[in-house]
Length: 368
Image (cartoon, rainbow, N blue to C red):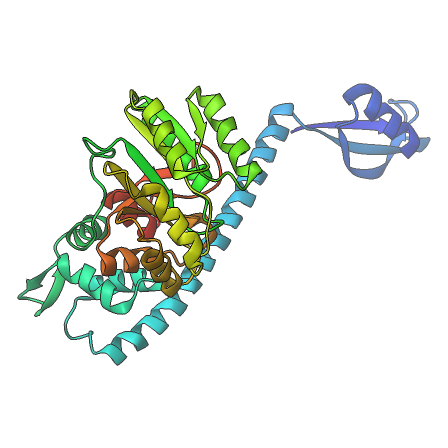
């Protein structure tokens, strides 16, 4: 900022002079009354004048100040977030220590191992399942005289998952070109079918789509729209015989994805009707679609009642709608049915990830 001084007769004149000389951004910093001689060589007479000090800011100074102010606000927000995380961590650790003492695990595992175990538990993984997963990634430390993780958290959790959970590998399998998604109403089968179709097409597979959900016009139109966008052949089958015809028509393709209508897991009549579509399709692979935001016991009921065709794998949807997605680990561990993929939103095709031990470990550890 540059500093200038002016001598004027009045404040009004000062304001006008500053604006005309230095522009509207200049500011009057101070004023004082001075006595000025009428004639320089005579001590008298004198008259009163107004001396003003003017500040003229540089444009660069304004930009720099603005940047500093923005950075300051950002830093304050970061500090607030960090403080919030610290407070939550302190609260969690108090609860975790109490739980650890209750279970008597404090003397068996290192603090690192216990911390990882509690990360799983806090996301909904059952205590016994979490213990089994972490234990699989531990070795005995003779110095600590406890079980300790063999590596860092991410590496250890990947190892623990790989030893306890099964994933679908090499999808689609050789010799199996018909894949059906089963599950109750509202779990997101239709959008998941579209996401899988896009994924397979990107991998160079020739894909066809069939829907047997002829009761819901909206679902048929939705899948047909996706098929048109991706330029995939599309068929509708309202009877088991027509389904077999459609599969025959698309038999030259690498894989055919079949969307089924949503049915309640408690409606035995509808489930038997669904089974009739697939009884004479030996090359079929059926995947049960589960919403990650429903109760774990309901997920077991869905698996049991939709196993009218032997399930080849599980698909978990709506991970973005719950903070307690650990139930998917419980279900996959207890049933030992492999996981095919997970969806994290409604966007097609972005919000889907083919299951991997690394991805599972990262979402529990909240790392990118």
